[in-house]
Length: 193
Image (cartoon, rainbow, N blue to C red; front, side):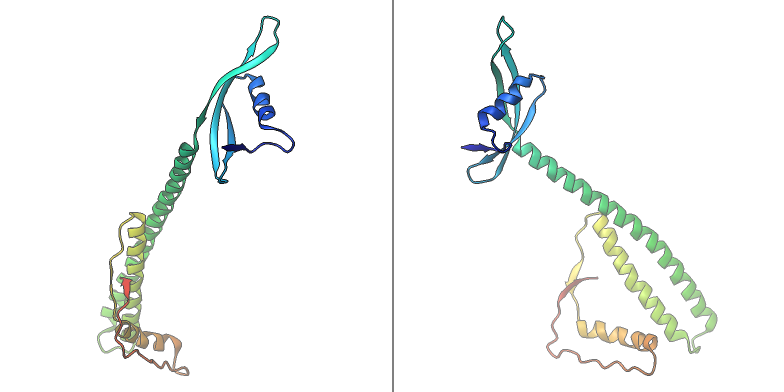
């Protein structure tokens, strides 16, 4: 049993009759409701029957269920939006990667110019570590843009946290101390690199 989605006070026969009398020859989309409440989209093709006295005596036509076509069209639209987002993410990642390569090149040149014993070598190492971390994010954006699966592996969080502590301490400065409380369980959650 299908229930029509019609204007208040209008019955289904009145609703269909008003549409059929138009006789424009163009199909009309009508949304009906299944007894379970779900929408059923239909396309009504109709033409008025007129007698010799030019009086309307009825209509001839047929109804097509287009619910599946509408669902597929909506799904296609969503897919196209995701593809556009992926292309945009890939483009941004590519541009960002170019910037990172420039930063990395200048940092390495400065590192060589200053020599191994210069006090700013640790700062430059921290900068290069940040460039490496940002490159991983760029790789994830590029993977998303190409719809590739992420490279997910177990990561030792204690080791990862310890490796960035010295860089964070230099950035924060001496008045603030960083105290690490690392897990003794040694759990390795899965993360993408």
